Image (cartoon, rainbow, N blue to C red; front, side):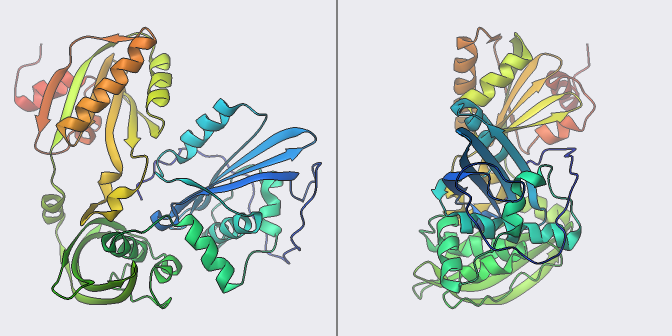
Length: 408
């Protein structure tokens, strides 16, 4: 799963090994080591098979609402981020959810508090193992680390069913399975099999990325030939596997071949066009930021030297169910707000670029922000990353340079 992680996080504590305390529900009031209050809602994103799950816990304590948001990464970073706040402001909750979980693309599903405890402790095991600090605020969420986690196999499977989303095609089962093997997330890979046993056809050396997977149905029903492009510690491999699926569960996986390929060969496999619109915007960039988040709530922002890049993610993970899966298909496009005053919209199809333009311009107009006419470009390869690394302050100057036109 492609994740935009906040930079420069501040952490101050980490869990200490020791005896786990019994799980106790405190009915109202706050306690330094216990549950914050009466639980009103526990919910999680159904994105566990993408490697990340978001948690939202809502308590009533002393007649006041208390919300906890946890970002749990089951591939590398463990319990990776935490936000809490008091009050009943629905807009604050929506904004915080979007900022923390907007890139995940999942639905929220109800879970129990013991399931929230289990998910948190499974993710926190990464922090302990790799000595990653836990997020600030441990005094608020310590109860999740110290409560008794689920151990019954049926209860654990029921939890995984809730947070894994609906796998409704054989291609989704194959793509998720290979994705979990790439991430060395073997428990999740086993969950995707019929008998709870996995066969590692990827053989990753570190948590890796499934960049692309193309599967072809063979003559026998439920059998497939899957060709995967894997990036393993900056080295690319082409992996071919014979897969069998029954009732959306992997019943057999057999490695056919695994060969190292060059970055150039990988780039050819991943080659795709990029469609870009560029124009000047007039108004306050901070207002424009609010406009983008209001109109495109699945956006995340990253600050760069020349401006702010907003990645616009899909609101679901349906792209995993395609016959040809691509890691970068989880985005619908990008919006780049440059300090120079340029607004750049980019997408991998002209339809997506036009849709983003319509959404952004319509929302801008309602806030009194305007642009001049957009210039339209079509590039044979993705160009936004190259521009951000180029040292140019405006996209129009960068385009003139790569076209060989003299600078004014």
